[in-house]
Length: 385
Ligand code: PLP
Image (cartoon, rainbow, N blue to C red):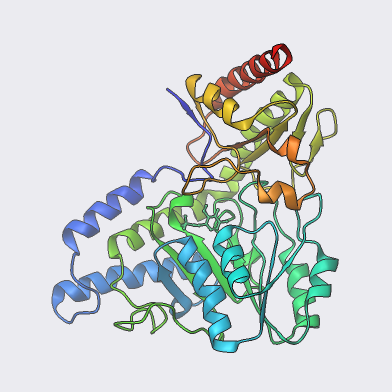
């Protein structure tokens, strides 16, 4: 059995979510905007899912806008506020491109990060003024796994750009953090189902009452006019099931996945010289990972090329990634590591091993054998050539 370490890219659907998807698709296939019984049944499924999502996100049911995934939720947040309010949008250099690219397209401001992978709060303060209408700071980073200081961000926003809306991309955070509490200061919150055991192409944006948001998709006026298009009822129902399971088991999951991750990261740092762990440090330094989400093990190996490493690891039955996954599959040097000031040479040897709800001790055992062997092989080769 291969060991899957790419849960931050996507994690398998939880069986209960898959069952819900099939049952709803089969039995409640009506259009939830219709009036007859089948339509009303589909609407009830949709509204039940909305209640669940509202509870786990810490908002009201009417504040949940279903989208076709995290990218759409992020784009709706950035473009929607900018179109409604004008002004300047601000984000951080290490954000996911689903936030970074819309902000850059709108000519917004991008502030730097610290070497510990958090938003640079001084730079943020300097970038804010009353012309700023949106500040977008993710809750947890998809590569480094670093949790961002959202409460401090919110305080700075309230002080320096009091009219601005605070958006947080909680796509990578939901599996590990109680988003309702961690993102309580944000007025817009994005999540994506396939990162926590739901299907791909389904997500949500929590839009707190009073936020001015112009829709991007126009049409039938679904989702309180904020996102037209017939809802993916089965996908949304499955997302809600996965969200509920994730939420209810989270405290325990964080403990046991965190222990697996520590065994993995500590084991690899002890076994491989010249290993740098993002936002933690080189081998030998005390490893406090309380500022990272439990599933994140992100390492860089000196004198190793990620692409070759991933190739050898796949042959050894370990599926991982270097930077975050992107459509082209290209291994460009990571903009997240660059924002943290990690050198290009070191960043070229990066490896993201991300754990998730189905991870096991056996997976970790496989990686603890395979990664040191692959790194040693590549280093032997680079010394000889
Ligand atoms: N935001 C973050 C932090 C992500 O990690 C991802 C996915 O990798 C996205 C947004 C995009 O979500 P989706 O794949 O649902 O479009």
